[in-house]
View (spheres, rainbow, N blue to C red):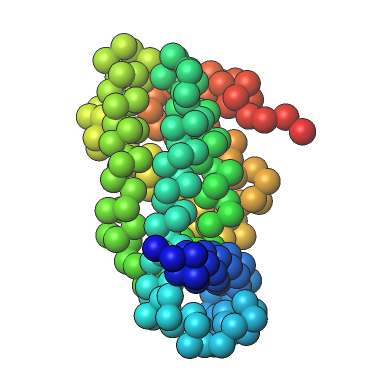
Length: 207
């Protein structure tokens, strides 16, 4: 590969990254933002945007893919090194929410274009990791539920989507969402409310 080709590739990658960053900001500000609006905000012509993303749906799909990758990383990082399943679950939800809060308006937007099933398919690796954690807690008696681990993971996933929608609809202050989500997820796993609250308070970042 020549130096010129490498340079062109680097510029293209930089343009693509800039378009994605600008698109996320514009779509969070205005969920109906068009490709024209995104192009203007990015300081490029519409043809440049379409050169990277053939449609608005493709652009949103790429943003959703990036959001899911960030969620998976946060989910793993949150519980890394934690042996107690309940504390690990609390920390993973709190960590995930830091990412989810940034993308929460995108979730509502993506449901129009990517479809809920498409989002669920993208979340499969995160769900599988959750199943393993929940199975460990159920087998060890930390969690108590009439549901098997796989079904409980689906319930937890829907709880988090529900909290996202509650914040988007103005039913829950965004500042309270992370702790509320974590306590609710623990309670759904059979952790007593007082213990769930204490675990989340311990795990939540201060300041």
